[in-house]
Amino acid sequence: MEQPNANTNELHPLVPLHDPPTVEHNHLIHQLESLAYENQSLSNVRTLVAGVAHEIKNPLTIMKGFIQLIKPDLDKLQKSDIADLLLAEVQRTTNLVEEFLQLARPTKHTTERIDLIPFLEDILLLFQSEAKLSKCELTANLQKFKLPIEVMINPGQLKQVFLNVMKNSIEAIRMTNRKNGHISLSVRQQFHFVTINIRDNGNGMDSSTQASVFNPFYTTKEKGTGLGLFLTKQIIQNHNGTVKVKSSPSLGTTISIQLPLLHSS
Ligand SMILES: Nc1ncnc2c1ncn2[C@@H]1O[C@H](COP(=O)(O)OP(=O)(O)OP(=O)(O)O)[C@@H](O)[C@H]1O
Ligand SMILES: [Mg+2]
Image 1 (cartoon, rainbow, N blue to C red):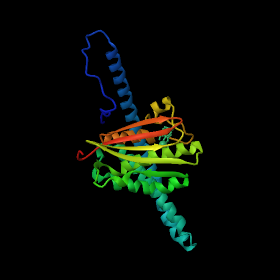
Image 2 (image 1 turned 90 degrees about the vertical axis):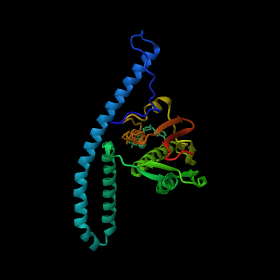
Image 3 (image 1 turned 90 degrees about the horizontal axis):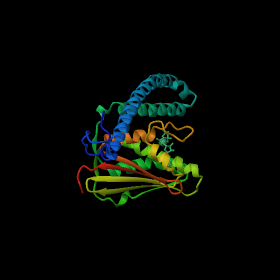
Image 4 (image 1 turned 45 degrees about the vertical axis):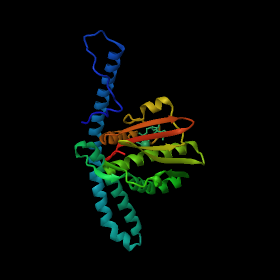
């Protein structure tokens, strides 16, 4: 299992343990305890995710077979669009399950060299209609980048990250019932890193919610599973990056994702 990212979980240099307990000692012990807890929950969730994903795959295969079987009958009734829609949905779920399985097997984490700007443009395009449906304006500062911003990423996993984060933003804006919902995506290049900020003017979070958002199964939503940001953090850490949250109930939320650049600027 990979170690939690050094940027977010920096340990103090080891202090000799024969000294009387100091504030430093207690702080170190507290950090080690929370790392152990985090590793144990991560391992439990991995096993659970792999188990559930595996079990979902079987009925999906059966559903796909049956739809294909009744497709000619539906075609005759001029209802082929229903079969196509069902097949597309089954395929989408299968892909999602595959992604979950891939995540549960971190050793199979494969990356490729990607130019971040067109990659993000494609994601925005994908998300545009969803944002429009929720009457949210979606803006980005991508045009200003003339040179490639190259990163080594697993595109499927990173796509899942941005969709998770933007879906949360839309849900947060919906909670406010505001008419001027806005999500902005901004990219900033700094030395060895690129930072992508996703900001929304949704309902925001108080400090106790903020402290828990990356915990598995933490949700404040009636129909939430509380895995979106947990998986987001795991994926970003697998990419040697960091993810941070800054939020206030009155201003909204910013999620900052930092990834290492392939070439420093
Ligand atoms: N942009 C945001 N604005 C306000 N609250 C947020 C935002 N993003 C996350 N949260 C809070 O963090 C919690 C955890 O988010 P997370 O995405 O992990 O789970 P979820 O959205 O509740 O469920 P799901 O697993 O379906 O994504 C949310 O329930 C919500 O309280
Ligand atoms: Mg979510």
